[in-house]
Figure 1: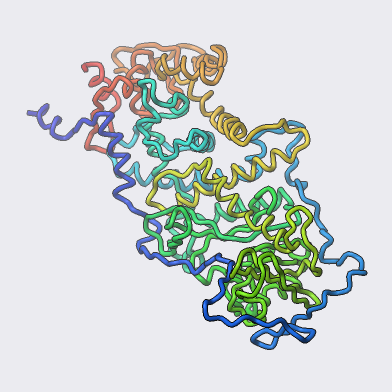
Figure 2 (figure 1 turned 135 degrees about the horizontal axis):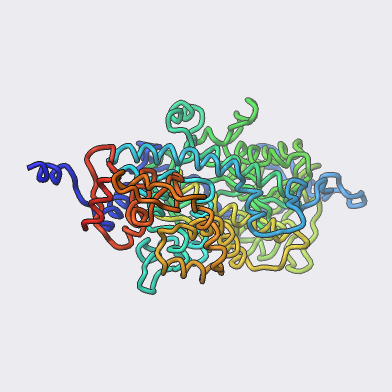
Length: 611
């Protein structure tokens, strides 16, 4: 009867059942950061061409010295005097390139560039709060000492990030986990070499970035509290290590996400359609992301601005927030017609920045002569000048017109290569900085399917760091020439190295897997055996797992708790710290899970021996 009762108190889970439990965790919890789901349609419309109305009367050219806008704003027909020295706002005060904080010694490698952006402090934050979540999960299971439920550390998290980068290079970020870890020759060997499938799924679910106990309190002032600390640290690192060029671009980037989120956006013209919007400032030439913030409602645009600036239009607030780190540097900002306004150009002038951008046709400062008209010839241009700004209306094709404003240009000159007005050529050259950055993110993306919006942002953070780290790496004169794909492969390899070398020292790793690890990573036998030899005892001691009556002596100790363990016991159970050895999982043995929180290791050892 006693044995029957014992059987009723215990249940047996196969390895496949354990994997299924881990997979279902993400389905059971949609999101522990947000309970509401709202979709906001973006008002951002970047169509810059103006069409002539069918019934519109032809505009007669102005007979005075000025063009007059709807609000009586005057634009001079005559361009300013050319016989002047270079204007001060066109003299760049900071040279583009690496800053002093980016000095990493005589040796330059991909991991060194990566660590400048994704530094140790960020790793410590992730490890700290991920372990809090792991402990919370561990308390829910009676078999709490399974290998998959142990705490993580910085070495393992780096290896986990390395695998995400590998999946980006292989374009396997959307591939099923089973196929990545398949052992029938169709999987990726490197994934099995670094980590087990269950552990990878478990870390993917457990990853956290902030204190859950204070999250609600912090969300009163910061709606993105679940990820904001990590995000802001990365952006600050991007700014302190690199100085962008003279041309910057401002635009929005949509991170694909269809789960629950209060500020999820609908943008029909974006490939993703639904997602979380990030406002960005990038270098217009090499697309280095210099500043960004997560858009979480209209109030987020004015964060950090003065009370007077918060009274301005939301697009103006967005630009002012993004340009704060580069003010008084005489750089030029390029943006589309959603951001552009005469008000913005004047404010940027005061902040030591110039601006080039398209204007919407309904701006009151635009004269009627500048609108699209049937009478205007294709390729023709109209100019209007003030002391600090130039307005241009260009006809790219019949019945169409594009209107731009510039505080950088003060003449009617044309570009020598394209033959178009210089303002138009300049805008076309510098307008795509953020769009190109977004394309780079999509080419090699770490993003996996998730229902938690902080994870969607975290994947984009990894993409940002990978792209910016590559630009930093290219900026070192002594760095070898390398394609972006090769850079990411090298980076991923370096991130997983420490964890792989630690893993191969485990005496419980299957021999076949050890041989695969040595072959894939080029680790020789001496490197793999050094740590095992160090785990031998100075003298033989009694195994602390065997029954005292046996008095079995051993020369080995447990790699986890350092207690003496004989070879017979170590094949089955290491100790109470590790509980069940991974080799038993590989043998697909059934694992008994006691209903009691405290598992008797000696009793477990007997059960395994009898199976």
